[in-house]
Amino acid sequence: MAKPKKIGILTAGGDCPGLNAAIRGVGKTAIVKYGMEVIGISSGFLGLIDKHYFSLEEHMLSGILTDGGTILGTSREKPFKKSKRHNIDKPGRIVETYNELGLDCLVCIGGNGTQKTAAKLVNEGLNIIGIPKTIDNDVWGTDQTFGFDSALWIATESIDRLHSTANSHKRIMVIEIMGHHAGWLALYSGIAGGGDVILLPELDYDMDVVNDYLLTRARNKKPYSIVVVAEGIAKPHKDQSAASFIANRIEEGTGIETRKTILGYIQRGGSPSPMDRILATRFGAYAVDMIAQEDYGKMVIKKGEKIKDILLSDVGSKLRLVPEDHKLIKKAVGLDICFGNRY
Ligand code: F6P
Image (cartoon, rainbow, N blue to C red; front, side, top):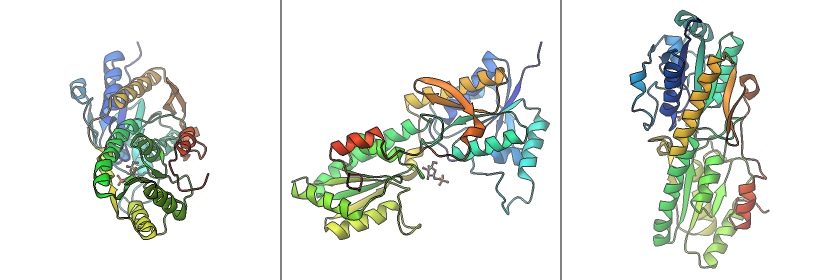
């Protein structure tokens, strides 16, 4: 009989709701279904460089499904990027630790940066399976990452709450939503939360169009407006937040009292939504089925309602951005939602 497999698992990049559900999905399937041994790597790729890891036992996976964050810890360590802190061959250390541990496969749960690193580790000769996560929903190749749905709930609820205070004061409220270079979270929460203006990194915007639109609303007896801004929109100064920049330009251009809210890390914290728990669990279980079949070098994805996989080498550095002609944008324009340009 073949020796049971030994696998490592790590979470890397910014955390998001659903990481523990994915760790549980991988761990329970590996231990219960296949009798594999599981090693938890601490703080992303840093744990492999600094040799911080522990035996992940089945009892440790109970009660974590609903918890936010990650029991493994995470870091933004990019081992293939030169840095001053470690004057060492980081990829070499990762390969060394993998071999010392006698791993048959390493499961890398993370966003774009993590999947890029995972693909490079495949080239170093390691058996890798990637699982995509991020609130940004911008990992190329998958229809959805876990973390997005939970963040969408939080962002939508926050926008909902702005309506009453905006109405009471007859103000314009600008809310900044995370998403890095992608506008998925701003687009979806903006539409779900009844935003009047939605500005995305993928679309050019013109402040004259935005201000004319807001003034027209005021003239049409709309007492307040909600402006949803993705953090990654184009702006002149890198250090100024998107919300500050847009709120200042609106107040100057319309003369209407304007306030800003930056939602920030609230969007990444707390318990995962039911949909994220399910997606993370499905991704985790599927990843281990692939390991059992020794089908390595791939990332698990969601396509329609199905869980599938693609080559990590195909994911590379590609980003999944909102297409300009996305059907939600087209429908929203028909509802007189302004995207900052003249359609
Ligand atoms: O990728 C998730 C994300 O929350 C982005 O939306 C945001 O731009 C970034 O991480 C923040 O990164 P950090 O945790 O390093 O501040």
